[in-house]
Amino acid sequence: MSGRAVEVSVVLPAYNEEATIEHTVETTLETLASFLPSGSFEVLVAEDGCDDRTPEIADRMAADDDRVRHFHSDERLGRGGALNHAFEAADGETLVYFDTDLATDMKHLEELVESVRSGEYDFATGSRWMPGEEASRPAKRDFASRGFNGLTRTFLRSDLRDHQCGFKAFDRAALFDVLAHVEDEHWFWDTEVLVRAQRKGYDIKEFAVDWTPKGDTKVDLVRDVFGMGSQILRCWWEFSVQPRITRRVSITAGIAMTLVAIVLMGEYLPLGQVLEHMQAADPMLVGLSALVYLVSWPLRGRRYKDILEELDYTETTGFLTGAIFISQTGNLVFPARLGDGVRAYVVKARRAIPYPTGFASLAVERVFDLLTITVLAGVVLVGLALTGVTSIAGLQSTIVGSPSAGGVGDSGQTAIYVAGGVGLAAILAVGVIVASARSDRNLVREVVSRMSNDSYAEYVARVIERFTGDVQTVAGNRSAFLTVGGSSLAIWTLDVITALLVLAAFDVSLPVVTMVAVGFFAVSVGNLAKVLPLSPGGIGLYEGAFTLLVAGLTPIGASVALAAAIVDHAVKNVVTLAGGVVSMLVLNVSLTEAVEQSKDAQVDAETAEPTDD
Image 1: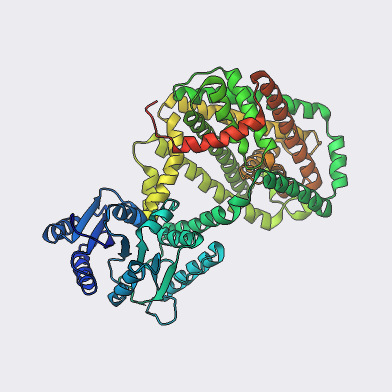
Image 2: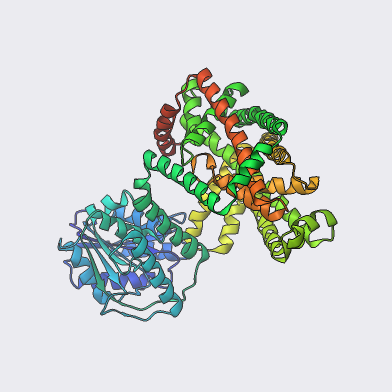
């Protein structure tokens, strides 16, 4: 097409279209020629990693007709990725795309193209939901489409009726201005482009089209439920929530949540009894719990040292323990886990460890924490469920006995069985992740592919693979994997022992086996609740989960369980704060400066090119 004044570029995204692609290209060329000057248009086949004869056919058409161009990808890019690839290479100022099945009647192509080519609109899109359209669609497709577009209008404040109709035209400059911010490269691409275009103030024309579905349609679990739904939530968070989450708002919200929790506890729980229980707690056992928890911190430093050594950096356990103290203190003081990035700043500022390495090592540690907590909670869940089925007197009578005897009765037994199933699923999921990290086979991709064969499954698989990739950082070395895994188990076991000592300080009467089992479960779930960045240090989240589970699975009253949860969390937070203050003084680190620096550093680290180091 060199030497020609191409005005209009039509892109046809194609995946395994050997039966229809030739007819589609010919029909497109004929329709364009009916209203555009000769030489003013081109057709690009954006072939997206096909494994049939589509590439051969596209090559032949491109060789026979210089109005046709073929762009091949060796791997699946997704519809949005394939369109981006082809649009960048297109010559026209008016960029067009439509689905290769020609579901939209081609009589509308002139209106689509001329709406943008004339300069009247920046974007144009066909609509199957406007008055005047004729669209015969199966009930299941009709329901899904209405639901998706309704959610998009509600959450993303879009004025359009149909976002996913595969019949669109764009002004080149306007499209690339929008694409600079579009994150999705799959099926949600259409919607995100239109929503962002509206937010930027571009003129968009939506007009009714006659549309007939071609082929069978199937609900795809990964694409339709996980993919599209999660992308709506992502954009809603970015547009409506994230701009409002300033530091002042976060701190205010955290304080407000704590006050609301206190008010609600005063309304529904006997706070007077809680305070009485706290005053009656054995101070010797509470003090011993603090010492046990303190012992876990050098283990955290040693584990971090082992992780860094796998990344070719060696530091002392003492320094790294101090860095962890400071970062965890940041998480207690600031909401949204802003302290997580502080550690990367500390090791960079004091030991010149690069930011990407600091964040990567933090990710590895977090992965092992989550894996360990999940396994602990899952194992205990399964154990509780299995014990509840048997006739073993001790744990069964305590946990699944009649309500009058202090147990939770039939409903509690059913809940435990369900929880046991969830725990078993969690253990299996962790097993798949760890096995994938340890194996040459891509087990994660295999499992996801069985759920869906859509290109969105590729995206989901890559997200999970990044998680397993963090494990792979140390899993490649069997000795390091066992060392870091063993350290993680020891750290969280000491965390549970701390809670058990606090619980024992309240003079509860439970069999040792029951207390240990429920203690492991309650502490594990409580720590999982703290992963949600809803309050500084997870205050309120941990206590709520711990109280609910201890009071629900044992004869211990809610007031005693809450008192134990508050003291347990307080002991851990006091040890953390004390260690953080000492570490900041020794290492000469300002926490507020570290938080500010780490936020900028995280952005730089995420956009940095990978190195061989």
